[in-house]
Length: 419
Ligand code: AMP
Ligand code: GLY
Image 1 (cartoon, rainbow, N blue to C red):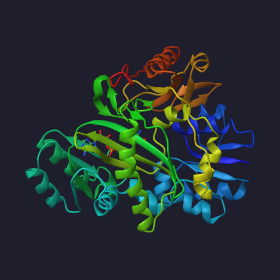
Image 2: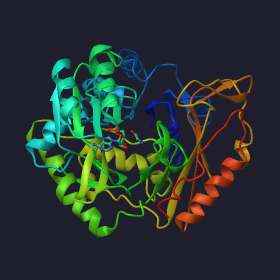
Image 3: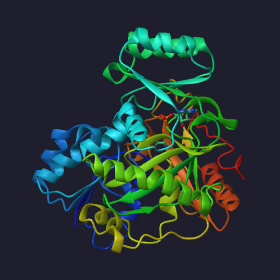
Image 4: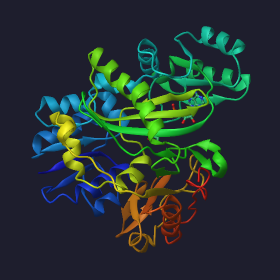
């Protein structure tokens, strides 16, 4: 079977490396992939948001299955369009993807169904939102309703920051239409956890809970990034806590989406805060997380394609999904300056040696004159597994030590704070 994978980051590379283990998989096309993914798949220069281009490619090639992982094409409805031309596609429908595409939709759904999350209000009017942040308790969190490349959330530690965040979104139009509506919500405290699951709409199977590291610098300092590293399983997610999350959050959310006419299929990602009052939802994503996926899939002990197909075939209940014991850690190497301004085009060396002791998943790299050069903020991730989390972390760092490009930076405390 030939498979297309839509996207071009470390998450997609990790998925593609799993697909290659399946002997029935013939060609893997990555749309658009990247220069490092090209080592493991055939990259096609069609962007992940070019829905007409994706559909045309699928119509003119013998595609047996499609895997859609980035948020934008899911929210644009590419899974529905692929299904309409007879190509089964992993991922939610456009209607179900609203759980990520509209924070107001997700919050209202949670309120209607009693799913624990921060208290909030939704505003379409800038004056009303500004009046709200003038009197609310501080800190407060201001969120653009729509997709904003991960930049739409401001955790405002002062009233001035909250006012500025509302103005940026609703008056200055920094996020375009995505910020015309904002959600203002209660600030929660606690450790965060990423709970990912596969579902065919009715049945679901959990992946090991993971932990992302969103801030750029050690000690959770600095600006938010796309994710600087991850570990799995999450050390604080005990079997008792996982059972509570299933009962209070996962089961009611999947039922709510079914009841409201948009059953979810694919990977549902519940971003949780483990608050003193119990686990609460920070956000839902309608897809695999990056870099959580790199750590989680490193522990996978079954065929990924079969498991993903079970979500579209509605056969998840009878399909095994198993993971190895032990732990995994992913450490991201980023371009100096990221998530702010950074330079690109620097040669990436040493990754062949790193790949002998760990998985190297490429994200922001391009192929140029027969070598890999940097082309993005998050350049690559190195993921290692070991019997213990401490060993997995050490090995992932040993892998990154072998890789070089000018300006490379990484956090030095991935997974270590929680140990
Ligand atoms: P999101 O884009 O919704 O994942 O938000 C980005 C980050 O903002 C989260 O990972 C949290 O660290 C933080 N955040 C979002 N909502 C809240 C909240 N209600 N309370 C505290 N932190 C939050
Ligand atoms: N790791 C966070 C995300 O994928 O959105």
